[in-house]
Length: 396
Ligand SMILES: [Zn+2]
Image (cartoon, rainbow, N blue to C red; front, side, top):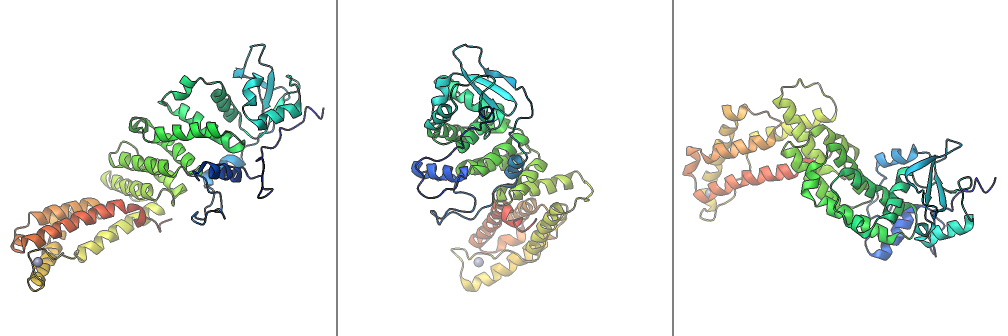
């Protein structure tokens, strides 16, 4: 009976020298240090790496793990559809929560750790399986898929999201068990190739993007996070992805997804204005709306400084500046600009640039100064666009 209740060995780091801590994250860190790629600096920053910022666990992951109970609920386990092999030479029984797996023992000797587990347990049977408590059933299934996969299967390009989800699960297994370095390398390569695959990323639903984003934040795939965020922003600008799911994801990780957050709120507010939705939303959307409107209010009243053109001089430039400011203030009050919603700072700046480049009264100033001034508006628009995240940084 005690055999039957026996738990798997706790995954642990071999040849530990520093502490008795069993935190799998620290194990990960340890392994990645060896590998030279510190993807995962740990929860509260690592003492060994002074550059690591202090960091909280992403909230969503916390809820994902806290509410998952791996202890069995049934007396008799269900046989797994895929990895309960009928082959008589598959003699290793593994129970994970309420699912029974039966696989070839040689598959499970991939690491010394698993080998030790089996040696400790002795022969397994359906009534005396090796029990695994660390993984979720779907994680173990994904892991077994990877163990049985041929080189050809492992090299296949990912074209569907469920296959990417399988990679996420395998990544989780490499976090929970030691010595799966080769598998981790395979995972890292897969994650990168998907993040740079524009066609795949265009085909992802917002829910898929959110899941991928959560994954790369949690496992600190920094480069891939930047790629995904950039892609998601592009899709928001081109309206090929809706703004609300992006807002939800970005609100969850406002620090990591600052850029996405700025763009998502911006696009969302413009959509609401375009549809003339009654402005009944509260909280962040309203704050963002007012914050954007006040950005334009400031620009409207205070023209950007006119740079000194190459062929101008300080003395003459005072006159350039006063004309520039007068024309700016005038253009900002024109009908065409007043027709644009004040929260759409980017459209307002485009319109202002267009108005001033066609403004006859402005054509009298030094042409170099005029050109520099118009460039200044263009730069201001780009800066505003790139900095939407900063703009919303204080908004909770
Ligand atoms: Zn001038």
